[in-house]
Length: 260
Ligand SMILES: [Fe+2]
Figure 1 (cartoon, rainbow, N blue to C red):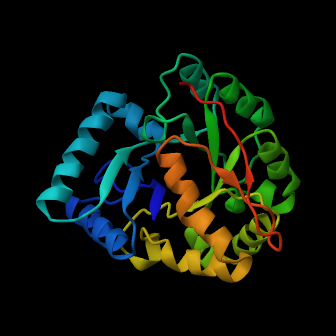
Figure 2: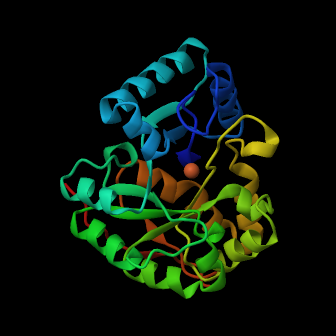
């Protein structure tokens, strides 16, 4: 599996506080069958500590630690952005950090408020050559109440990433119901751990159990697509497949424009 959203770098954001905790997360992910992780610390903390050069340095250092500790896990660079005017400025200037240098950019919304400029901002990101990947829409209050909001974004070319734990009820019944509904409607492109810690109660970097839940909910093909094929495609900057709603077996190909 490939995890495109994980706060695994030590002592940077609200992820692991220590190197040992970060290494323990890596061990947990590798044992769960994850081959590669995109380290996606929150953009604000990355900017406060020196931006891109700092981030590259930290990823490189942690990569060395993985090797030194014999943990077979690839680590690449990413960031989790909040949809803000500042992000649009960075994107237009071509300096927004993407997932492994691809055209895919991980973006989250406020969990409770729907910014009035959201649709336009996603459009602006696309005009600038990025393909937004919306993090955890199933945990966003407005989408929970009005899934049509996400349907319109997906129709416009935005991708949706559901948190693995949501499919297991780890964020409560509302997030679980929302995740299941979004999957059933074919509005989800991939799952990711959004891991923050090696501790079971604080989002460990696990995906395989959620993939199993997906298989039960929507069939083995959708589970493979959302749990493996699409995360791998995102990590590699390749096109993703938008799953048809369950009961129809074949995925529908979508082509996305990259930044080249
Ligand atoms: Fe996150």
